[in-house]
Image 1 (tube, protein in one colour):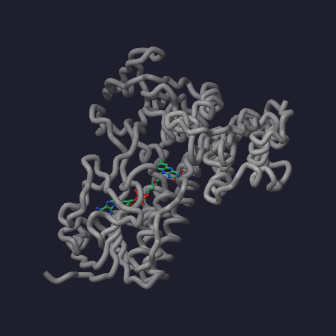
Image 2 (cartoon, rainbow, N blue to C red):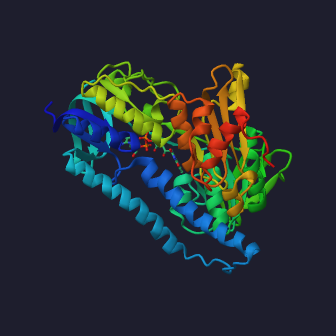
Image 3 (cartoon, protein in one colour):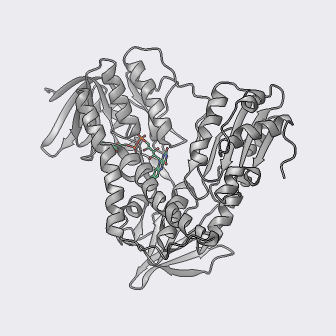
Length: 467
Ligand code: FAD
């Protein structure tokens, strides 16, 4: 059968992994085709993930800050929310970035094909386009088909009042009573948005802690603030049934702190994401996919089929955009004949809640589980001039050091801008910095970033009088 398109590299999926891989491949001279089922490039992150959520979190943060200033003599009155305008702002942010990707693809002569792609052989991909099926014959392929939200099977998903994160980001309206099922990063970010806009938000979480992967001390300041902002956060609570009724979605719970049933105007399900590896005909190409839909790769991002690579959410945790982009560069470079490897020591995680929580490298929980000998330097923001000046002293900066080498192995920050501040700790870990390297680095005063240097000094014992 004659191919409609022939190329050296085909990339399946145009999220942060896919577009980065396609652009890097093209920059290195590979004739590249990028296949995406949706009309806009950018995948989950740009269209219905990282970017729109942060645009809306910005609105919630402004509202919160304005309210907080009332206690200090600056009052703005009750916020008036024009939901259509706010939605347009969010859409404009998304469109600016996705539009940018289209022109970057054109500049590099990356051919884009809109449609659902499925492998039909180890060197062929069939794409279901609006104009019929197109066959692409390729020399090498990079699979970057990402993930999608897990849908709890017992929920009446045909009712539009049951939504996932994509539905929540559509921002159709501000529901009066919103239930968020799942106290992970995505659930709490969306809870923060809607609480800021005026919804009465209840969060239920199965585990005994929100954001279960993070250290408990980091969670405390967030849990406290959420306790003030939300109707309730219920841990160790399970949703056992949800039924659509005229008055709302009636939800039944199992858990100590929650009434057995309650009615909500909207229910957001944010209980995790599942990889799309099982939906792309990988078996026809000979690529092994796990039962859950993950694809196993080596440090060069190769699957078990040497000319086919896989990157991003579908190769495993953490499912984060910055992991996908780094893996993408490795895959494209290896496809172009370079000797690249994915050898990042650490990948930072951030919850863009209020306060933000960010951590990188070894956590205290992990150190305990693995029996690692670590020492901790913790700097409370109550002792930071800048934190006091912005009236946000609940945060802290924590660094974890190997007790033998005094090298930094991990770090975490809770407080406003933690997500921006964590990069320095990531860099310090990558550089193999010792506590003294960080403590002796002059940080500008007064900044929240200063707390990183101070935490190292606390560990070294050169700061003792914190309070
Ligand atoms: P994706 O972005 O999932 O892209 C995969 C693409 O492949 C999609 O466009 C899909 O349409 C396409 N595709 C799939 N199958 C096919 C097929 N058969 N044919 C054609 N096209 C196909 N991460 C962060 O790092 N920071 C954040 O702040 C953050 N916030 C988030 C907020 C939300 C609400 C959500 C849902 C996620 C968030 N994430 C965040 C996670 C982030 O979005 C993902 O880690 C990232 O998008 C993964 O990139 P990817 O390239 O692997 O796949």
